[in-house]
Image 1 (spheres, helix red, strand yellow):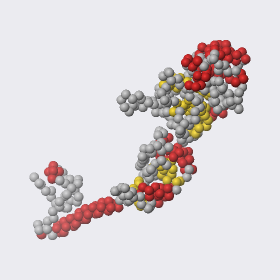
Image 2 (tube, helix red, strand yellow; image 1 turned 60 degrees about the vertical axis):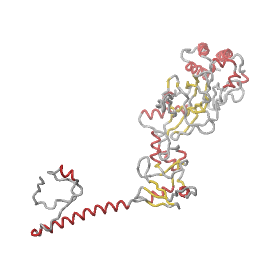
Image 3 (cartoon, helix red, strand yellow; image 1 turned 30 degrees about the vertical axis):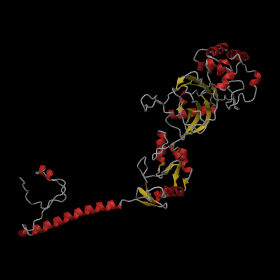
Image 4 (cartoon, one colour; image 1 turned 120 degrees about the horizontal axis):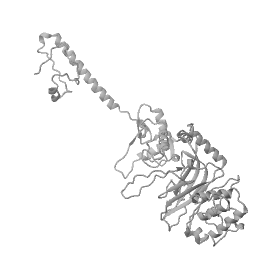
Amino acid sequence: MVMSLRVSELQVLLGYAGRNKHGRKHELLTKALHLLKAGCSPAVQMKIKELYRRRFPTKMVSPTDLSLPGIHSTTGGAPAGLPASLTQLGFDGHGSPSLLPVALLGPKHELGLSHLASTLHPVHPDVKLQRLPFYDVLDELIKPTSLASDSSQRFQETCFAFALTPQQVQQISSSILGNLSHTFLKESQHIFFRFCLSETSCPQEDHFPPNLCVKVNGKPCNLPGYLPPTKNGVEPKRPSRPINITSLVRLSTTVPNTIVVSWTSEIGRSYSMAVYLVRQQSSSVLLQRLRSKGIRNPDHSRALIKEKLTADPDSEIATTSLRVSLLCPLGKMRLMIPCRALTCSHLQCFDATLYIQMNEKKPTWVCPVCDKKAPFEHLIIDGLFMEILSSCVDCDEIQFKEDGNWAPMRSKKVVQEVSASSNGIEDSCRSVMSDHRNSSSHSSSSSSKKVEVIDLTLDSSSDEEDNDEPSPKRACPSLSPTSPPVNKG
């Protein structure tokens, strides 16, 4: 009942209870909820019922209805006779307040509760958000809840509220103090706010409603910046990802936290939001989890090789071999832990350590080989490549054959050609020097045994330009250091 009151009615209630009645609507709502949780007097309870009767004169929930089972359940189900978007503030088995999504309704919904319930989306649809690899969910502070919208209005606004247990307050406080003291706990805890489309077919990615604005306890929440538009005239969009609201949350067990969400409605699209308490993990923990999944049997990769190299009768070109690099396409270094996604059709692997570390800095989870989605839960360590890396240490490329076997690719031919060419130059220089020594020892027959040396590394133009300077590109040393210089002029 309190959550459905308007600003003027909340001010009347707080003034009647002797509380401060100044502030914005979410502040007044927080004060009224705190008043209710603290245990108000029977007179204040009668005032709440009176204001509620004025708010919705067509139907009044009787005390008998409020005593029905499931009204104060923590599952988020709406009480009988109340609109689905007005969920009562319940208490769990430990006496702590349960989660309470609240919709601030517009004046058009004053026609009656039956009309409201038929026009709104389910409060808690069977929506599941995709798992965040670096964050383990400890608790759902607000389970996935529909953003109730009125199709007749373009701009929508909804208010949500949640409370923390003493244990949660202590754990979050310890994480914040650890980060402030630069100790950086390995498993710090945060509160994340997430949006997605209200689709139940599969786990949903984060997806922001258009023109989103979020306020936590009256303070604006920083959202990711807009991406540059890909085409002229296209409205810029924000990159959708979880929002960390830990710094804006009241770490209190008595005062609930309020979240006001405003957005622009879209025809044919509905959105859901959720708030989670998560524990952050490091890349080393994820790598350990990947290892714990085990190494994929090498026979799987051999079967894939045979499938790729099987001759297609309809094709005029037959592939008889397949070359694969042992270097990671990300760091251009030799693979240490070769992995790829189950959804990838290629054999080329990338290094698991580097891939996880890069996604820790900027989570994209895209395969560096085929540019397709490669989420953490789909990664596998290839057993065949593990065998190849351990047995082949002197080459960076291998060749797979039709039978599934492999052979290292070493460029021996190039090495032999280079060594042969260098040996030929040295041998020619030695023979020229030897002939010159023989000719100098027989000075009487020098005119008939003169040896002419031709430098093939110099062209005619450089020879004319550098007449007075010795060339640094000569293939052989000077034949006679004592011979007089030749004047070409």
